[in-house]
Length: 66
Ligand SMILES: [Zn+2]
Image: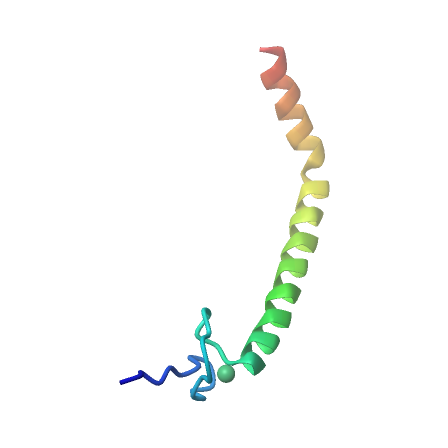
């Protein structure tokens, strides 16, 4: 007996194998959301790095000199 797997996001019965437990629609949906989050994190992280870049370099040079 085969177990019917369901998409954990929309509860749609999955046809075939889905390693992520998501239907193709949700993979597309969450894939793009995930990509947007990654881009946002990189932008914020990059901004923080630029903001604190001077501090980080100062600390780094202190450590190197020691
Ligand atoms: Zn789904």
